[in-house]
Structure formats: structure tokens, C-alpha cells
Length: 154
Image 1 (cartoon, rainbow, N blue to C red):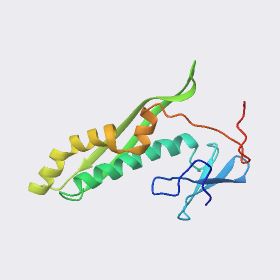
Image 2: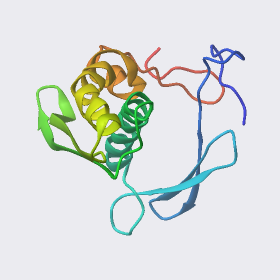
Image 3: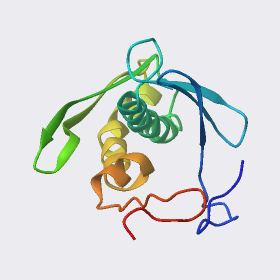
């Protein structure tokens, strides 16, 4: 995987590559060789919006499980993310994003401690830890350029 200009070779760098594999279908590849199909929604492939929702759920799930898992492992751990795709004066975007955790811990003192930690874990992932959700929440400019470094409109 190549690093784009302006990115660092240190541990902060993140990236994926996307290659066309069919009509309206693409293959995302991460630096470790993981592959994920991406599509328009006419097939089982995840759409880009679904990938964003999955990324929010996954990022928060990892955070919350790391925090609560120090007490005891969950008996059930499900996360759902939903929102509405809207088009308004700001263009196309998602509105009303909601992340819902359905988590159950075993009975007993360890489970009680994990349950007690759950509200704080949700606050921490929302307010500080989840890189994906924090990026969506904060004003984060995204630059677009051609492979030769040309920037459209300049």
C-alpha cells in the first residue's frame, strides 16, 4: 500500500486503497491485506454509507468492550447504528445518527462492575475515544486531488 503525499510513515498514518472490480463495485484493501467489497447498494456489498455506519459501530464497540471487558466478558454485545440520509442546503449527508448498545453481562460482582462502567464507557467512546465518530462530529476538512497531485478547481 502506498502512502499518499502529506501523510506520515509513523503510527498515526491510516489508509485504504480502492480498486474497481465491476460495474459500480469496488474492492477496498487495507495495509494488512484485508479486503472488503463496496458497491452502490444493488447487491449484497456494503455501500459507502453503510461502511461509515459500520465503522462508527465497530470503533465504539472496540472501545466499550476494552473498558468493560476489564471487569468481565459480555454474554451479549450488539451494536446498531442508524440515521437518515438527507439532501438539503448542505448537500447529501446523514442526520440524526444514533448508536445503540445492547449489552448483557453475567450475574455476580464482576458483571455488576461491568454494568456500572457501561454508561461511562459510552460517554468516553462518544466524547473522546472513537476516532471514527469523533471525526464525524468534528469539522474535518477532506481534500480531493488527482493521482498526479493536481487539485480540482485550483
